[in-house]
Length: 376
Ligand code: NAD
Image (cartoon, rainbow, N blue to C red):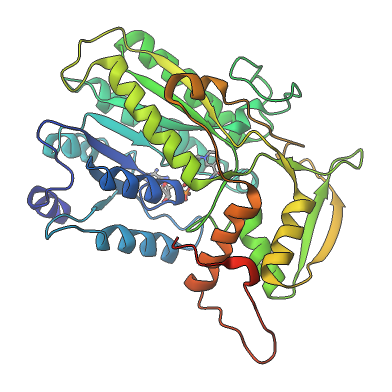
C-alpha cells in the first residue's frame, strides 16, 4: 500500500541495533503520547490505527498530525498506518517491513457504557483483534515482546481496597471489563504455549491533554463551559463514586518502563534469553478522588459553577470506586505516579482551551486563572 513506500523511506520505525516498537492505537489518547515519548528517547516507532468513529475522529487525525509534525530531520516523522487489528496480512506485512522488537498494543474498543449499545465491537477489537496480533507475533523469529493495555475494570466488583494484582477479577461489571479480562486469559495461553513475552498493564482512569471526549473529566469540562447540566453519580447507599485518576505522563512512564523490563526478560537487544514471562501490573495514581471533587476542581479552573444533577448510580457497568496498589510496578520498573488531580487537570484544561480555541469573551470571561504557564 501507500504506507509501505513511506515507511521504507522513513528512518523512524527502524533502529538497526536498537528498539523498534509497533504501537497499535497510535492515534488514540495513550498511544499518541507513548509514540511521542518513544520517539523522543530514540526508539523506532510505527503506529497502527483504524481511526474508527467511536469518538470524534478529527481528534485522532489531529493527534496523527501532531506525531507527523514531530520530526528531527526529514523522513523522520512518526507514521501511522491506517488499518485494522483483524487484518492479518497487513500485520504480517508490517513485521516484514520493520522487524519490531516490541509491540505496545493499545488499540481497543474502550468505554464502559457503549458496550451495551455495541457489544460486538468489543469482541471484534479486544478479543478477535488481540488474538490476531498474537498469532502474527508468535510466528516471528525472533518474537517481539508485547506490552498491552488491560484495565482496572478487570477488578469489577472487587471491594478489597486498594486493588492488588492478586485480587479477584472474576466479577467483571461490563462487557468491556469482560473482554479485557478475556485478553489476560488469552495472553496467559500464548505465553504458555508459544513462549511469547507478554506484559499486561491495568490502567486506572487515565486523563490529560489530548484525552478522550467520552470520559467524564472531558465532557464535564465541555458541559460546564456550555452551562449544561452534568450528572454526578452516587452509589445506591449515597456514597460518592470515586476514581483513581491517573495523569497521562505518569502512565507513559509506566508503559516505557514496562517495555524496558519486557526487553530484559526476553533478552532481545543481545542479552541472554531467559524464559518469557507473563506479567500483570497496575498503573494507577494510588489516591482515589470522589467525582464531586473532580467537579469542584474543574469549577475552579474554569471559573464557572457547574449545574450538578446528583443521581443514583444505575447498573450501567460502572463500579463504585477504583484504587490502585502499584507496588509491583514500582518494584519491577520504578513506577511512581507524581501528578495529583488538580495539577493534571490544570494541564488538561489549558490544552482544552487551546485546542478548541476558547478565548475570553465579553459575555463570559473564561479566565483559566490558575492555568499558569506550563509548556504542555
Ligand atoms: P483510545 O480510544 O483513544 O485509543 C484506542 C485507539 O485504538 C483508537 O485511536 C482507535 O481508533 C484504535 N482502534 C480501536 N480498535 C481498533 C482496531 N480494531 N484496529 C486498529 N485500531 C483500533 O483509548 P485510550 O484511552 O488511548 O486507551 C488505550 C488503551 O488503554 C485501550 O486498550 C483501553 O482499553 C486501555 N485503557 C484506557 C484507560 C483510560 O482511562 N484511558 C483505562 C484503562 C484501559
